[in-house]
Image (cartoon, rainbow, N blue to C red; front, side):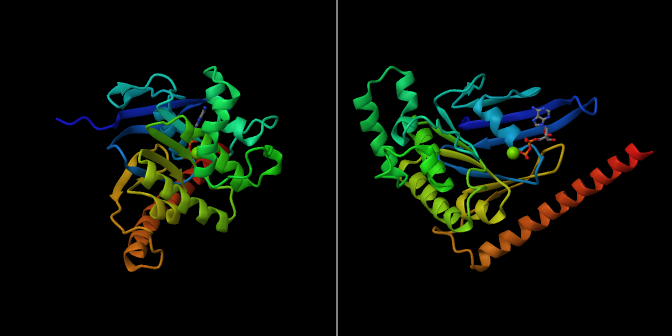
Length: 269
Ligand SMILES: Nc1ncnc2c1ncn2[C@@H]1O[C@H](COP(=O)(O)OP(=O)(O)O)[C@@H](O)[C@H]1O
Ligand SMILES: [Mg+2]
């Protein structure tokens, strides 16, 4: 039997909500198998556990029950095999672009000449040539995200985990970045798990979309996308899928709203 490259096996995650003095089940018996070179988009309403699931694949958080394996190895800590890109690039403001991109090489004791050379390749890959010596405060939001992506790519990870990396960008920059990310993924290959709350973004990027339920988070539906690339957002197939996914999300959001109202009513009693 073939072992899936990423194997999330029946994980649940409970957090202690100290403010309300109770337990919150963020994820409830989630299972997910993913092959190499897939581009999975995790889609769901805010608070449904997308980041929690991603952080468990990264090794930043651990399931209360269940296991995560990547490449047949149980995830017990972060590792270079799994690169992470966050919503904010979190660059080191005192270092120029190239030093930020190559920081992991510094940690491995590589000299400046080598770091600069390796960094150049990845800076070019994300379209930032000419900005090697700029400092983070001189960059736009989109450029900072490019630096964050270059930094993750430089570690040559087998998996890139992205937590709403384009959410803070203006819509034009977002479209450009989506296009470039697909381009990089098609050329470099590798497995991407990409969290988003945008249906369009998921449909533009993914080979699969996992739609999650509101708390406790489960995978409501795993949808394979065999739309041709570049994705045509005006095509009937695209819009058919979009309609279907929006209906699922609407149901989940309504459930969320009802739950919040019920909680408020209970608290007022
Ligand atoms: N460290 C934590 N401590 C307590 N509760 C948490 C923690 N992290 C996440 N949660 C809760 O778990 C649920 C899922 O959170 P999260 O994974 O961040 O959702 P999403 O990324 O889909 O918006 C939320 O109800 C959130 O409040
Ligand atoms: Mg999140």
